[in-house]
Amino acid sequence: MGTLIGLLAASWVVSLSGALMPGPLLTVAINHSLHRGVAAGPLVVLGHALLELAMVLALLSGLAHLLAVPQVELALSLAGGLVLGYMGWGLLAAAKSPPSPLPWEQPKEGERDPARAGLLSPVWAGVVTSVVNPYWELWWVSIGAAMLVQARAAGTPGVAAFYLGHILGDLAWYTLVAATVVLGRRWLNRRAYSALMGVCGLFPAAFAVYFFLHGVKLGHALWRF
Image 1 (cartoon, rainbow, N blue to C red):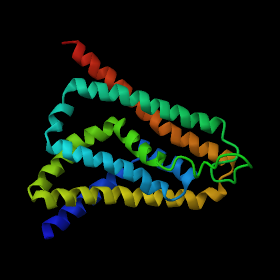
Image 2 (cartoon, rainbow, N blue to C red):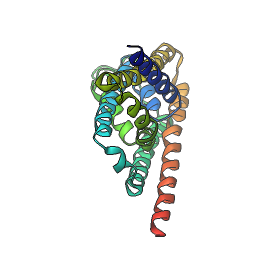
Image 3 (cartoon, helix red, strand yellow):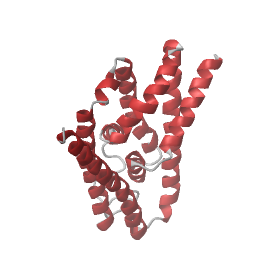
């Protein structure tokens, strides 16, 4: 029992330290929280958690070797850079032309309430944002795979403790983010909303540039040979 608690605690701390770093998933959590309230945080994490469960099972089946192939890393970097770039462009466009009414304001008669539209979209956002982020795959084939090997030594309960601790770390942080956004949005006017969307848009845009340049560098190294 002590080993399982230790695995859960270690996984929670490592997961929380990673979640605290600004990235695409944080941007998605903030954006959906503005539209759908505190529930958006756990819903985004749900999508993220489903994908990570699939990753854990895949790593246990030997996927780590495939993801370590340079050509696969190249494809992930370029594809992830393009998708993150599109995400950043969309948020920057929202910053330039904020919607009317704002997401949390009462919609005009006959308009669709964005807070009630597309209940599953935060879940899918959690899935898509994770899978197109090359850092996510790289984390799992390095830190995640190493921790999974240790957890596997304790059998199925050890793997379950590792996975549960990892997800609880994400859940704690993104629920706190969503709650903070909801409590603070009453002070957000159109100018403040534009500024927030602009800042959020810069994160995926910056990651897009980084991953695209990383992909170009990998491609250049491969083509030399």
